[in-house]
Length: 281
Image (cartoon, rainbow, N blue to C red; front, top):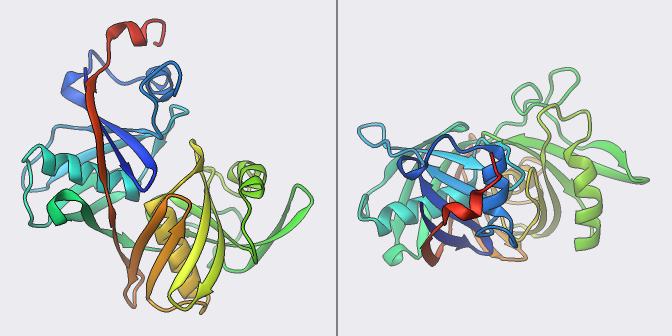
């Protein structure tokens, strides 16, 4: 079973073609493959559904804990680069279908940069989802681990909770992010971003990713955080998102449609030996 390994500013994924799997990919196999000691090691698996045609390509995204993600911005950029490397696409825009919606991708700079039209952000509690009466989830409060936090929520096909902070700390992101992810008000769990606004065109975030934990970068997290910053009147529509792994550019239109641009790096290709998956059923 061949794999193709890439990272998008430190957020690393491996791509596997569904046609090369001996059977359906199980949660136990996903956990084994993503394990950094017992498997290949990655922040997730991008499963190429081998479908292409007028509706474009199809992608499924799996987290290291075996769960499935609806959408991943960095994963989509990596998948687009993988298709470009395989000469299945050129420099023209093409569609990729995910469980969180279909997006348009375009590869440039000889594969080094990918732009994804991620779709529209929503702040509607029923669509994110967030428990309670239907509303836009903006500037609400929750106490986690004895710390009072102000948060806003958004979805771009997957759920996000953006927490405003005056300073960011990896220790706090790890400690509080793990608790916010599973807070009962988030019925599908949530991705968590701790955000500091730098100026009208720049924000800094640290990320606790649902099903993956502390993550160096995230495209959907960047989209959600930038959207919240603009919705709260803290930033304009063209925002650079700074993360531990690097930077992503987010452009928002008046209806909160998101265009994301960021780099992708090819790491390696290889084969997973069947022995690696013994006992993982």
